[in-house]
Amino acid sequence: MTINTILKSDGPAIDEPVPSRYALNVGDIEILVISDGILPIPSHVLAHNVEPDVLDDWLDAQFLPREIAEWPLNVLVVRSGDQVILVDAGLGMDPNLKLEKAGRLVQRLEAAVIALSSITDVVITHMHMDHIGGLVIDGTHERLRSDLRVHVAAAEVEFWKDPDFSKTLMPQGFPDALRATAKRFMEQYGSQIRTFETEAQVAPGVTAQLTGGHTPGHCIVRVASRGDRLTFVGDAIFQVGFEQPEWFNGFEHDPEEAARVRIGLLRQFAETREAFVATHLPFPSIYHVAMAGDAFRAVPAVWDY
Image 1 (cartoon, helix red, strand yellow):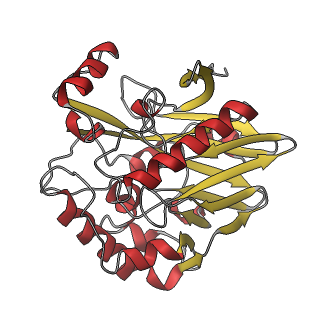
Image 2: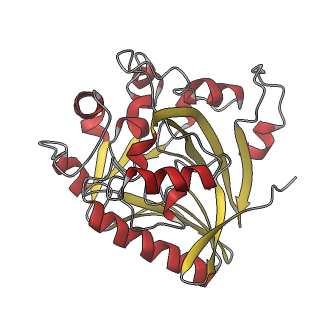
């Protein structure tokens, strides 16, 4: 049964005022973008290498609040042949941080009638808790397949043995929460992890590629079939990154390298006209990139009905 067929079934409804899943096809590969909710963070985290008034001016121009930025959280479900691949897993739950607007992945998978037991592979773009937290919720590991394959870059696994936060500027409490979540993730899934150095073919037409930058083992996921392409960029591109790709995000462990990665991807997408999805762009987070002079411009994809 395909994802699109599942979406048309009489599954359990969730009474929500906004859509939370969006289906599309890349050639023969089926993709479902799922919203894990919203992550509220202090707006100053969006750029810490510019003066606060410069960031405030940008926020004003974007009709965004100066105090709290509400980051969308998006994950993918990809079906290629007989494989069902979850790309990232959302926030899960950390009661100490009071992030009640996120952590909806399992609920929304159930609403789409996608059983956890149907997932054959998981790709983790990086091990920040808003990308792995949904896998460490109590009871989740037991509902997944015993032969589940979890694909993570080797550099990412190595980094979280002793993570360096010296170049980040995160809100209070986040470094400790990230360390604790990564440790729990490795304890639960360590035996199922398949590491790769620079690239791994996860399924026909689905490839994970190391980029580094945001974290040393950050990767993106390329999907290609019958001449069509889509890339999930994880945390390589943020909303501010189109106009100001050299601004440093507070969650970047190597902000200078992250900026180089971001600019390289934006240039590539502008040249190829390929669509991409990002974790923290507004749902359903499907964008193209255009050039506006020397700056990049985000062009949201038109919804396909």
